[in-house]
Length: 353
Ligand SMILES: NC(=O)c1ccc[n+]([C@@H]2O[C@H](COP(=O)([O-])OP(=O)(O)OC[C@H]3O[C@@H](n4cnc5c(N)ncnc54)[C@H](OP(=O)(O)O)[C@@H]3O)[C@@H](O)[C@H]2O)c1
Image 1 (tube, protein in one colour):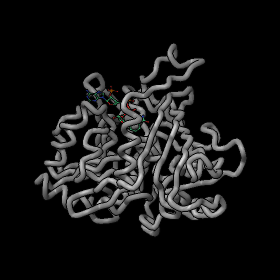
Image 2 (spheres, helix red, strand yellow; image 1 turned 60 degrees about the vertical axis):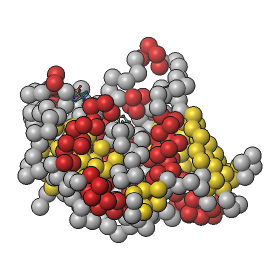
Image 3 (cartoon, protein in one colour; image 1 turned 135 degrees about the vertical axis):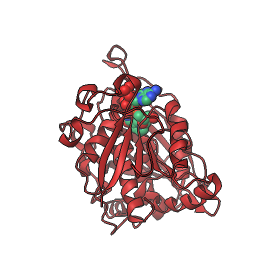
C-alpha cells in the first residue's frame, strides 16, 4: 500500500523537485500540496512557476493548493515533506510531529539538536535510530528528520570514504554555489549577471557545524558531534543555474595514496543502505572523473539522476599533508528534495514510517 504524503512549500524550487519526484513514485502517493496564502485554492499548474526540465506530473497538475496549517490529520497523511522558509517551518513542523506525523524537512531550524537526525543516508543512515530517543524526550509519536544543508550534503558524501580509509583532521572548503540554491526568486539578475557574490548568509556556519554532526556518532542521548576534525568554509554564489561545486582540501590522519583513494571512492556503495532497494538511491553515490577539467555543473550535475556526487582533480595536498579535489552535486536533488525522498524510503524500509 502506498504511503500518503504532503509537500509544504510545493511551489518553490525545492517543492517543485519534490512534486517531480513524488508524482509517479512507486511507494508514495502525493495527496496534498501546500503553499503561501496567495496560492491557496488555485490549481497547482496555475499557481506554480514551473522551472523543472520534466513537465508537471499529470496526477498533480490539477490538485488544489492548500494552506500550510496544521489541519493535516494523521489518518489522512503519513509523511509531510517541508520545503518552507526557515522562519515559517519550525512551528508547523513541531505541530505535525505532535499529531503523530513523520516530518522530513529541508529547513534549517533544529538541524543541530542532538535528538533530531540530520540524515545523508549513504553516510549516516544509522542516525535514524535516534528517533526513538526523540519521541521519548519530546513526548510525541511523530518524528522530525532533517535533510542537511545542500553544500554539506555534497561535502559529507565526498568526505565519508576519506574518513573511513585515512582519517580526517581538518577540512577547508571553498564553494561555487548555484543560483537555484537561493530559491525561486532568490538573486536578482542585476546583481549576478557578469558577477559572483562572495557571501551567502549563514552558509559557512551551516557547513562547518552540520558536517561534524553528519559524520558524528549516535548515542543513547542523541547524536554526538565528531570532534576529531574541524571544518573551515568560504561560500560564494556564482552564475550557474543548478549544481554546487566545492574545492576541498583535507588534512588526513594517515598518508593518502591517491590511487587507493580513487578506488575506495569508486567502490563506495555505502554499507549503510546497501541492499535495501531504495528507489531513489543512486547505483554509485560517488562518481570519479579522471579528466583534468571535470566535474562541470552543466555536464555532470544529473549523474545518478542528480543523486550522485561527481569528484575530480583528486591529488595530494602537500601544504596540509592530505588530499585535495573538486566535488560537484545537484543542490536541489542531492542537496534537498532527492535526499528528502531517500530518507522517507529508508524510514519506510526500517518500519519507521
Ligand atoms: N534551493 C535549494 O537548493 C535548497 C537546498 C537545501 C535546502 N533548502 C531549503 O529549503 C527551503 C525551501 O527553499 P526553496 O529554495 O525551495 O525556496 P523558494 O523557492 O523560495 O520556495 C518557498 C516555498 O515556501 C512557500 N512559502 C513562502 N512563505 C510562506 C508562508 N509564509 N506560508 C506558507 N508558505 C510559504 C512558497 O509558496 P508561494 O509560492 O505561494 O510563495 C514556496 O512554495 C528553505 O528552507 C531553504 O533554505 C533549499
